Length: 112
Length: 113
Image (cartoon, rainbow over all chains, first blue to last red; front, side, top):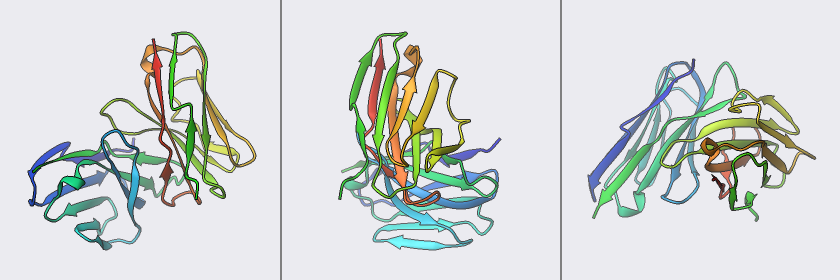
């Protein structure tokens, strides 16, 4: 069946360090979304990637969609304490647009 | 404008009882999703509605779970004969159409004692 993996599961960084999380799918994706969930909160949409090789930036966040549309990454430059939370990728399968699968998430802790 | 709302925010029920969870999506959003999130875990997809129909119900954990959506708006998730393993936060999300960004509600925390 469809597998969606995110690595790492947890990441602890010093404030100011960079952070990257990766989302990998076993099948080709239609599109991918990234969400952030703060502790005690609900997921909030960050970005959507649709095109092969697409790169999008939001201030210190850089999102990339792989050429084969099977993987994606989220990179945060110079982390801040406000970046704390769990980052989820959500994939929409090319073969079935009706189901969305969320990755297990990467939990980011930032040490001030 | 108003976001996605869910009620109740918290529900404590005894094992074996039925519960109904409600989701009010953003007006005009045709797609509606239900997820379950256990403590410290990811989001488990339960069901997706496009309008009033649910093309994919395969995410529902068992036949004790059912969901409906009426008028292309409000949705209810019903859990019959609740079990302790049903304890989790149930999240609802809506989007303009399938594949668009999802807006999540605050969730319903269900505790089965």
